[in-house]
Amino acid sequence: MLLRLERVDITTLFEFHNRLIIYNQEVKRMDLQNNKIKMGELLKNPQATAIIKSEFSEFYTPIMIALSRNMTLEGVLSIAAGKVSQERLDRAVAALKEL
View 1 (cartoon, rainbow, N blue to C red):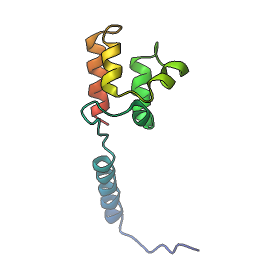
View 2 (cartoon, helix red, strand yellow; view 1 turned 45 degrees about the vertical axis):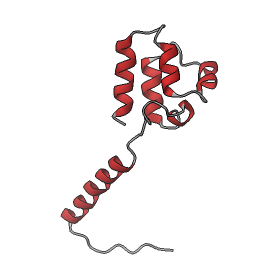
View 3 (tube, rainbow, N blue to C red; view 1 turned 120 degrees about the vertical axis):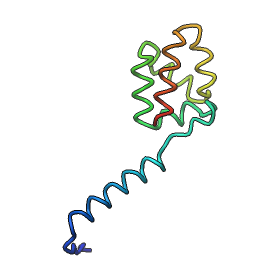
């Protein structure tokens, strides 16, 4: 099937593009469910994975990831609280909320 392109005003094209970006940002905003989201669900998002990996690289190992997949973010944060600073935890959660 061939797609037939009509002549389109460049302004119309930019408006469509900007609306699409806004729509994607609104629709794909991550819901952390008051930190009750499962880590497995969180790790499906590449941006969330990058944040977790950068903030907690020392814990980002295959074994730790496998063990945490069925845990909630809240549970992981409570375990991590004794091992990393509260500032790092807050920074990571704030970054995840921005997704």
